[in-house]
Image (cartoon, rainbow, N blue to C red; front, top):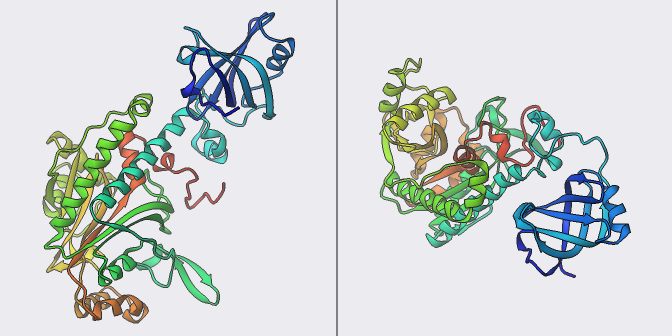
Amino acid sequence: MERTYSGELKTGSKALVKGWVEKIRDLGGLKFFILRDREGLVQITAKRNSVPAGIVKAVSKLGREDCVTVQGLVKKSSQAPGGMEIIPDKIDVVSKAASPLPIETSGKIQTGMDKRFDYRFMDLRNPKVQTIFRIRDTALTKMREFFESDGFVEVHTPVIQAAGAEGGATLFPLIYYKQEAFLRQSPQLYKQMLMASGLDRVYEIGPAFRAEKFHTRRHVSEFISVDAEMAWIDSQEDVLNMLERMVEYVFKGVLKDCKKELEELGAKITIPKLPLKRITYDEAVKLVKGKGMKIKWGDDFMDAEERVLGEVMKKRGHEWYFVVRFPSKIKPFYIMADGKHSHSYDMIYRGMEIASGGQREHRHDVMVKVMKEKGLDPSKFKFYLDAFRFGVPCHGGVGFGVERLVQQMLGLENIKEVIMFPRTPERLVP
């Protein structure tokens, strides 16, 4: 008999359900338990003299989080989850759960975050926790749909790299046979090299790594980066237009496909109204200073400054906005400079940077000059610079943090909630 999920049950039909024991109730002659699978909950009811004696005995021996299969008849029940229950004629215990349980899976008792991540496999049994990852999955699906419909080609570039896109101390070094290598900070260098190939528009969804010992709501050591690059642009406005259309598409998709999940989490989201507001870095610094923040021109925005800026912009009616024209000295060597400013941007959502990018420098001699000014050795980037010696069009792109997007969308305090097995300076397992 084929498996039926709890969300597919039909009154009067036979069903085979598989899952975990959520809770058990014993009312003497009436015993029932709630079975949980990935689609929801279903009540299994065993009434003495209505089911075989062995079934009643089997239910009596069940414990919370036991892994079971149940076969039986689906009946209406106004008091059961979903308005239906199963009258079992067969129950098999696939695996017993040890007792006591290390963490609470019902959500009724709050378990500390560290403990939850120690037993993440069990934490994910909590329906609300699973819901986060359903929404995350939908967001990624919609991103892929958008890129494919907009003429982008999906690519996969190396995770093991000879040099970092940003340079500096945020690289994770490793020994690649007998050579020093690094886990990538981003696929930036490779997606730019692909602009020299004639593919014109590429995107990649994959892991990136930053050896930053930050302990904030938005930083982890490993994350999923959504990267895109597009050639033959007139200015970075072409990139901003593409990016805001993608966000609009994702939000429409999540609202359409995840109504149940959003309701379960109590998350309220609205589709961004395009075009999104653009403000310059200089304007943003003035706004933040006006709220008493100690920031000087040339500083990057930290978490506190982004929050304050987000509050100001929210009062002006903007959940989403771009900050453009950052100082060139705080941007990577591959961002095109315009004197002391650069052709760069951050995309902010509810007071958190979600994406950053800009127009790239495509002139070989200028790039070499900037590399030296920023203390980088061009000889270590020969594989990358060679691509710019043989004709590269104007291009620009984005690095987008999908986990930050979902974090802000759902109003979650910490980005680790959106990562199944987060990696931080303190956490390498599970």
